[in-house]
Amino acid sequence: MNLGVWDGWVVTAKAVTYAATLGSAGGVFFLAYSHALLAAPDRLKIQRLVRILMIVAVLACGARIALTAASMSGDAAGLTDSGLMRMIWQAGEGRATSTRVIGLLLAACAVHLNRRPGALALAAAGAAATSFAWVGHVHALAAGWALLLIGVHLLSVAFWLGALGPLLLIARHGDPRRAAGPAARFGKAALVVVGALVIAGLALAWVLMGNLSQWPGSNYGRLLAVKLGLAASLLGVGAFNKLRLTPRLLAGDVRAVRSLENSIRAEMALAACILWVTACLTTLTGPPALE
Image (cartoon, rainbow, N blue to C red):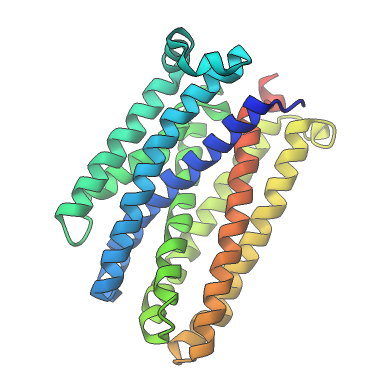
């Protein structure tokens, strides 16, 4: 697996697109289920964070298409090659990008106009989060059940990632009473969501690998093993937050807030690595099942 300069930029742009889209969509989810538990200043800061992430996601979508064209041409001339960009757009990226951008814009308007995200904001955020299912390896399988699995997986990832930024903003105040309620609400809902995330993710990995005997010998299998290891570490940190830190927050332990802040930063770092590896999986190599 050779990684050229332009390939590296494409992978990075794709990882940023994942992070900003799923983070902003999950932020809408967080505002919906934690609204009553949030102090007004925290709510405003989270809304601002969601809007910033949405802007980054839209810009990253455009950059990703231009960089993909440059990767295909092998030089910077591809950045302005309308023919290559049109080909990328018509190959399926156009439908996915349009769904993503429209979903983000509708969600941003709904969040701005309403104090608590309603059905429109949630549906638009969900559409943006699942837009990645319109392209890629799972879409190439042309199986409805596989698309359902990737949709569940993407929504679950958005739920988790979207809570990290808001919880970090709340934890920075150092007040366990402000952090305890939202952290406990997230942890309770995460029991179901993380279960769905793990089941859908493992099922997709099994299907995409096809013959498991190829796992150690393929680039896809090795990258997938790295992703699963990082995901297991992320799950471990999340379990620590729920089982150890949240009870301390509910008891009013001030030191638990700093621990939560550090733990969330660790989750963000692990999540960034997972998204970058995912971008490599979907850009640089293909699963054995499609060979």
